[in-house]
Amino acid sequence: MERKQRKTSFIKNIIISVLWVTTPAAIAMILFREKLPPMFAAGFIAGVIFGSLNLLCVERLVKSLIGGADKRKTRAAIASAAALAAIVSGLLAGLYFRIFDGFGALAGFTVVLAVMMARGMKQINILKENKK
Image (tube, rainbow, N blue to C red; front, side, top):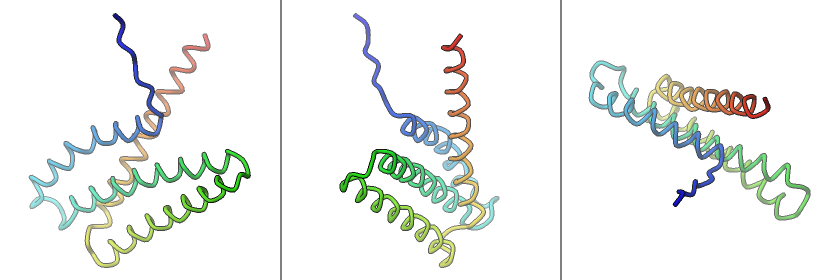
């Protein structure tokens, strides 16, 4: 019997890859936190979380905007835009009240972008091979 493959969205695959990459890094940062700037590990974890939420909200926003001018889709677009504003506000509030380090948050956010770029390049190579 052949095993059925589950179809997952491209964005969910990126989030899973981000978790696989950042979990060992976050554990190492927590274990060796005395060698890092104060609150760097917390900032890294917060950056990864905010970056992943940002990616999910942008996906929902784009899907609702491309879908048409339906009343329900307009509400979904407004809700996604409000969620993006809430994510940015949470990130800025954490930086303002010094809950976490800004450079750590930047590093975590950048990891999400780097994984997204790597997965995108992999997908482009797969599509090029299938075209031949």
